[in-house]
Image 1 (cartoon, helix red, strand yellow):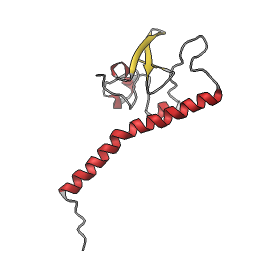
Image 2 (cartoon, rainbow, N blue to C red):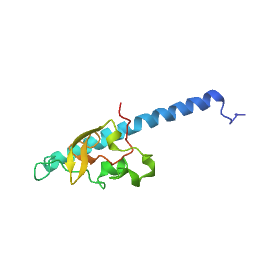
Image 3 (tube, rainbow, N blue to C red):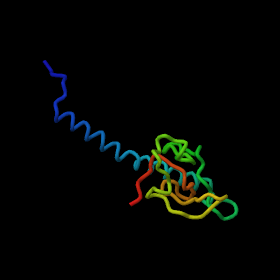
Image 4 (cartoon, rainbow, N blue to C red):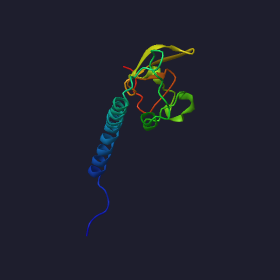
Amino acid sequence: MMDNKMNRRGFFTTVAKIAGIAAIAPAALNAVFSSEANAQEKRRGSAPAAAGGGMPMVDPNDAVAKAVKYVEDFKKSAESKGNHCVTCGFYAKKEVKAGKEVGTCTIFAGKLVYANAWCASWNKKA
C-alpha cells in the first residue's frame, strides 16, 4: 500500500522546483514577447520612432504590456507595493514629456515608459 503523505524531503524538493520555475518564468516570457514584438515591427517595416523623431510610449493594451501587467501609474496597482519604474533596474531616464519623466526599459525595446509606471517584471535597482 502506498503512503500518500509527503515527507519533509519531498516537500522541500517540490518547493525548490516551484521557486525555480517562478524565478525563470518572467525572463522566458520577456524573451518570447520581445522577439515577437520585434518580428512584428520588421514585418510592418516601421521604425521604432514615432512621427516627430521621438520614441513612442508603451501602449498599456499592447500584448507585452498586458503580459507583464503594465500600468502607467503604480498607485493604481496594489501589486506594485509602492515600486515603480524609476526604482527599477531595467529603467533609464530619457526625457520629460508633457511634464512627466519618461525613460527606456529593457522590457519594452524601442518604447518609452513613465517613471511612475509599474509592471510585474519590476527588479530592484542595484
